[in-house]
Length: 312
Image (cartoon, rainbow, N blue to C red; front, side):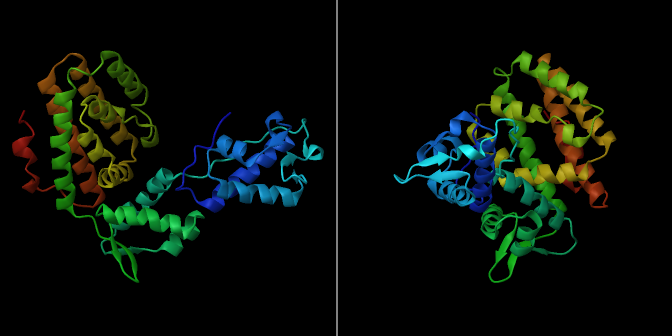
């Protein structure tokens, strides 16, 4: 049976609504697994704690969909089961990771403002229909990573993007990703590289949401270095990835990115390591050009790439 894959970071009210709607739908569609019910069995099915589950069951008891027997056991109301009624797909509420991805976009948009901008918990809560506690929890993680500042009694402050910070991040990213590539040489599988190449080829003329970025993940994972992996999983790296995606929606940019990936893959498949590193380095710092255009600025010589781009 499919499970909700829930965790304690879900919004309890949304989780209760999901369980209530899904369980009612299962009962009304005549799902045989709902003929005998228990909180333990339901908790295992939905992979949740008892608290949101009990609230959902009580809602269905009040609606008459579930019957509470004298011995306190639960049973689906046979009069509510209609096997002719098709089962509907009920959307699973977002996980904590989902809210990280949603709210980091808000940080990106705020950081593109020329002035410091406050992210308001109540505003974001109403905008996305989620409890303020979830918004506060995610924003506190961002603050801990240094993306935003928490100002007591005022809120969460996002600062304008600094060009020097962008270049500093790309410098660190280049060092770690080139190191990952050197560590990954013996572990990179030709078949996996060819699979990624096929995906890049098919998506070379697509839109950014369809762009396959798994080449970087393949290299980083193949490095076998968990500290390098952790760097690219942390919030700052995800912020700059989202920032670049926001800055590069044009089809022409997506095609250029795909072609750059294809050139790197070809070099890796043929074990031309020095060329692969040079192409990867140029690809990483090519993102600075796109971001500078977004900021309406010319890329200055102070980033040092003219001297370092050919170094291998």
